[in-house]
Amino acid sequence: LVQAPTEFVYCSSRLVFVRATSMANWRIGNVMLQQPLGIGTLQWGTTWVDEKMVSGGRIADAAVDVIVQECLAAGVTLFDSAEGYGGGTSEERLGHAIRQHAGAAADSSHAEPCRAEAALATKFLPTWWRCSHGAVLRAAARSSRNLGVTRIGIYFIHTPVHWLPVEFWVGAACDAKAAGLIENIGVSNFNADQVLRAHAVAISRGYSIVANQVMFGLLNYKNVTLQETIGVCHRLGIAVVAFSPIGQGLLTNKFSDQMIQHNRVAKISRVQHNELSKLRGELAVVSQETGKTMAQVALNWVICHNCIPLIGCRSVEQAKDTLGCLDWRLEEQQVRRLDAVSLAYSTLDGKRWKRVFFANLFGLVMVCCRLLRWCGGSGFP
Image (cartoon, rainbow, N blue to C red; front, side, top):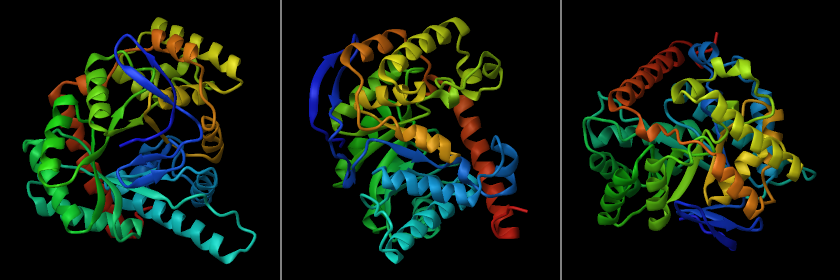
């Protein structure tokens, strides 16, 4: 459940959304957030595969530590990883950075204390060769060790795409909670029907689904399937954690027309140049009105729709820019103007065979990263 005091309520053509005030505590299950923002760690892996696949190569350890420090100091405490990110090395790196910050704050009387404890989330990937509840329990225990925690704050089922039904995997997550391995159960990339089914299983076990992690932002807002999913989540009190809220750079000041040929989100969504130009044009106008960057406006727009943006940070500069989306809110008319030029792409509408292919390809990459990690420590030459 996301809870925040409301400043006003306004209605779009599809759903009624609540604008939250800046001075609010947000809650996901029993996890309290001082700021409605999460930091993703997809690009924090340390294996040779990460070095080759991540644009710009491996992020320096010092940069990771400063990113975590900056975010915690600003009250941003939600950090998201996955067992598949670098075969677990992203989880290890995140856990190490959190401990480094805690240790530095404890050792120095001049250290700026973080405003709240970090809330660590990670994800289980149901690859096609996994077919038992024990796989979830073993994966949760492994992720706990990687993160250096006794219990995982939020444990997401990474995808509903599998030959076993979502009820099976939600039941397994309930087992992991009963075993004390996780605090809260989340789902990821679930549509409205799958959310309802997951919710029913969790409730039958005396638990609840606390969050659904989906692609949500100005590139996706008008999609009917996504709108239905967001509506169900809000009705059930399930937090929406919005990944890819700036389209991997499509909605930033640094974007250029040449970049669209290499942007993964643009390729998958087949976004039309004229549609994107219209959206970016209005985003630029609101950016000038507010004195904020385009990325900050796009992220704040997500917050104004009562969702928590989740953004990957691979540099200190990007982290500082991201934090600029906090402690202010767009005006109602600005939100409506951006609503009007938003687009309708959603991964929830993707063909099943493609989703199966990419889920299992990601699973194979996860196994490869683990092998590299096993052969050479971190797996990084």
